[in-house]
Length: 202
Image 1 (tube, helix red, strand yellow):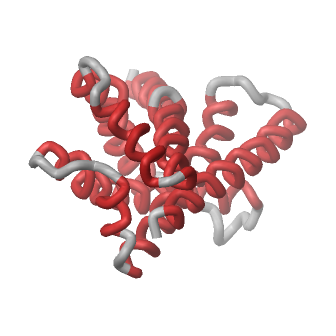
Image 2 (cartoon, helix red, strand yellow; image 1 turned 180 degrees about the horizontal axis):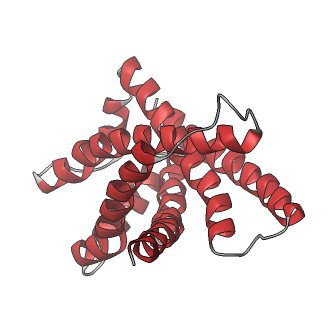
């Protein structure tokens, strides 16, 4: 019974990492990328989201609750998993280790990012181009965001590979190899979008 529960929790953890969390990541990066089109374009995209009906309900159901479960169970996996890097120096073992490392980095980054934006907005601040430009005026915060965004994207892209395997979508070695190339492309494209958005505020 305990093994069945853990198996179910791991599959749910994997699913939530893609739907809805992964989809929201892509959406969020796309909105931020509007900064490359100029201040007015970015502010318009952000304000459009702010005035979405039942925004708070959608945020909790689609983002925060799935994210909390994914993060808490992810910490459990990270600290109970046994890495085999010392015995088996294969590519997948490195991805296994990096998946857990970037998960921890992403969690720290998200806690700060939510505090600096969503919580500040709840306290009366306006989330706009100027807010982000002020954050990135600090070299430390610029590097912190680059590392955080890159870690989040890697965690999602590599998580797609694990999702496909755990849900039986890629069973054969060939299909898993193709999925590896696909997730690499996803990582490169989303990283370009994410980093471009960051430097648009500088």
